[in-house]
Image (tube, rainbow, N blue to C red; front, top):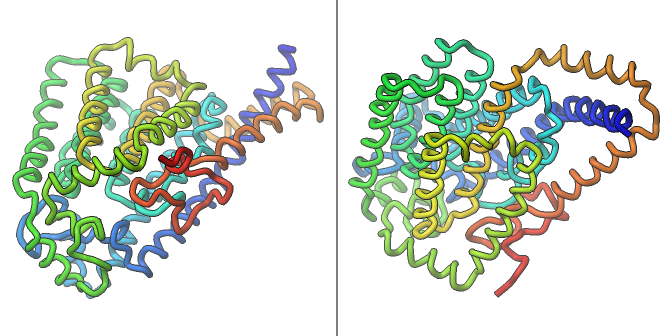
Length: 419
């Protein structure tokens, strides 16, 4: 039995490494298709979110949109095309670095469920309004820092960490919600460098820049006049319901907190938010079970744990106001995935991809793998298929599958229990 399990583990490891590359290529191709679709329709949410600018005055969420608008004025390239190009560049960075880290991870078999899950790489394909939002900026930056923590020296890692820490205020000025994810960068710093009193003091001071940006975003929340000016600058006729809160991402700039909270309250009362997203959390947690030991430090070490729970509790407060619960859940799932990779690779250093593939083939030959050894692997493949294709985290605001679902057999957990 032990020999059979060893053979099956070799097959699982080798099969995952071989399958990962075409899976990511196909998924990224589908992501490009989705981005093209949102551009052609000039989507009021997935695209317009990136077009908020300062043409009506300084306002929260406007930094990236203003940069794109200025590039548009300078080059005459359509601002929507610029935004889509940026989105796809960010997704490419995320996919590339996550894939490279996984391929170099010794025990990739621990990640067999999460790799093909309906959220880690495929969330943006499952429904309207979830993907292509500004939290993907965090995904790319966190992927860069995770890759650096695994592959580079302490000195190089520190330089990259400080570069990201200095850039992050610009990310917060592009969407104030992303301040909630700042603690994950510090946790990754602790994984790689450890706690040093003087060094951590400098990290805290560097983090204060992002807190300052957050304060500016709260101060300049925006008025309806800002939304009107933004819509006119990019062509008000191009975005459906451009100035209307709820109809477009730009329209939310002119909405009050009470208006947003009222919509969330309605969803809680009438759309079964608590039950549906609780189910999503349970379903997603299954994928993390195989590598749960890599995340044990979030419980056993007080400082990483404090930072982690501060991020979670901050998001909990956000839940009470904003209704994009699918996005909030997704961004934490991605962050935790990278923390697990970083912690595991610190304990078990990565190897060259070609070496791991060669070792897998050599072990497979030495173990004299037979047809019967594939039964367990085929069973595992069926479990992965069922997990990947039978559910997904539904969009917060439609309650229906999106325009470009990758899982035609999938069940939107938003609709499991209709009230």
